[in-house]
Every structure is written in structure tokens, then in C-alpha cells.
Image 1: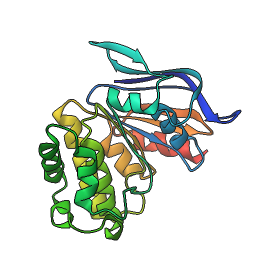
Image 2: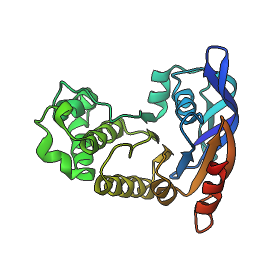
Image 3: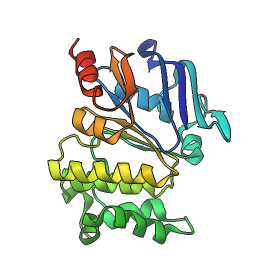
Image 4: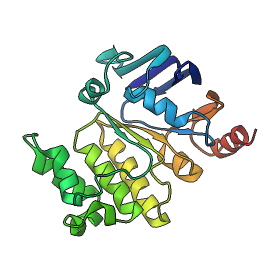
Length: 235
């Protein structure tokens, strides 16, 4: 679904991420972990097209249908190609209601109402809150709203940046369950940046650890992954 080859990116002339090779398969959840400043958000911003790649390629597709090089495509073109991005910080249009936030994305889509209903089935806690101003929702409710809004675009690749930051544990469990269920249904891959190691390793089938903008560890999640991740992040 997503392939990064020798990707280097950063800001101005300063590179933050150096020569990254990373892959997200079809219907797969992949976690990227690392301490603050490791380059995680910079990596995501390059994938979405918010900052340019200095070197390397970003490809979207599959082995069956072939891969398209999107390295130089504008962000809106990447969205049309099937990428949805939920940035860090439970972002929403605070002055609009929760329902208006969803309708803003759904308007213009012929199946917009059906798409909204589908996301409310995924996040039923949002149903009684549709008339409430989004800025008055809790952090967990805003995060669910942000993910629901992204899913209305019917992406092939959902990119989540720190979706559990500042959220109560019961909502973290709900978000994790939803992400896993979505991937299991097919048709959606997830690239997840996450500091919460338990969540990251349980939700994903593969992980990468970034340290100083480079991959310090990678592999399949499982019984031994926790110790490998903790060792890579302790150095």
C-alpha cells in the first residue's frame, strides 16, 4: 500500500529523517515509535506532502495493481489517491458542532449521509454529541470525531499521529479496537505514530522505531517485540 525508499526529509536545508525504508502492506497496521524529536511527525508530513522529500521516493499502491510514485504530488492529489491524515492534537473545527464537522467533509459526496452513519456506528459515543460544539468535547471525543471525519473520505491509507495523546484509558481501548477492526475488514491500511508502546504493539502487525531520524529497530510485533522496542528506545 505504501512504500518509502531511501526517504530523507526535513525543513529548509536541515534534514530530520535520513534514508528511511518503510513499508505498509494492504490491510496492515504499522506502528512507528520513538522519543520526541526522533522524526516521527516529520516522516508523516512528508508522506502526506506537507513537506517535500529531499531524496528518495514515496509510492502508493499494491503488488497486484502496481505502485504509483507520489513523491512530487501535491497534498490534495495524495488525498484523492486515497490518503487520509489525522494530525496530532485532536484537531477539529472548534466553533462548529460535531455534526457540522462531519457534514463538512461529507457534503458533495453522493453517499455522504451513509458515510456519516457508518462512522457513527464505529464511534457510537458521538451520536448524542452531534449538536454539541466540537470545542466543548473532551479530548477523547474530539479524537474520535477527527478519525471519523478522516474515514468519511474513504481512504485506502489512514495516517494517525499520536491518536492516544492526552486521552483517558477507556477511550484509548476503543480507538485501538476500532483501528484493528477496520484493518481486519479489508480495504484500509493504517500507519500509526504512537508513544504508547502497549497500544502501538497491540494494534500493529509490524513496527519501526526511529532514533535521531533513522530506523533503530524494525520487525513483526509479537512476544519478543516489546523487549526489542524498549532496548532500541533506551539508547
